[in-house]
Image (cartoon, rainbow, N blue to C red; front, side, top):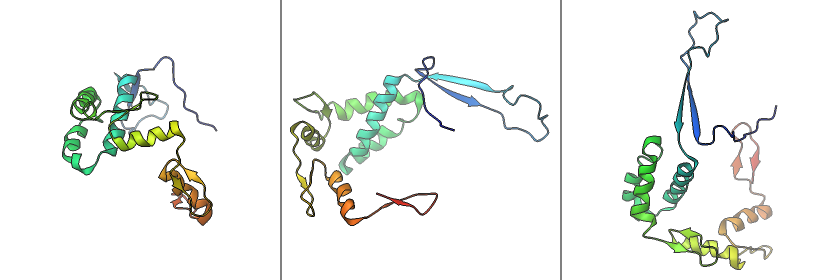
Length: 166
């Protein structure tokens, strides 16, 4: 059976939580188990979810010098009721002050290194070179992945069996 995710045209900005009472042993198996089920629907808004996700990515890229600030910023990020509050708080304290803009496509970054990495997508610069075959890459991680083709290293292990992967 193939399982695929589809976006419903009817539930674009809602997330459903089905609350179901635990089934008791004495219940009649013919009864409908969803009869006493309540459904709670909360408006989340796609815009807020995307903004929160971007903030979480930015938070994970911060350096240790910002650790204290990050602790107080992240304490409410995952709580739906305080999501927008966290987004505004984060933007005021960190993002707006540290803007590095790409002059080519107007992409914005809060760290200079991230902007420099991004600019390579426009220039085609590939500063990372394989010592074994002279292939070049625009990101260090891409070089590290490539080196595995030479070494045969398979650092990732399946949790269900002993299979390993690049």
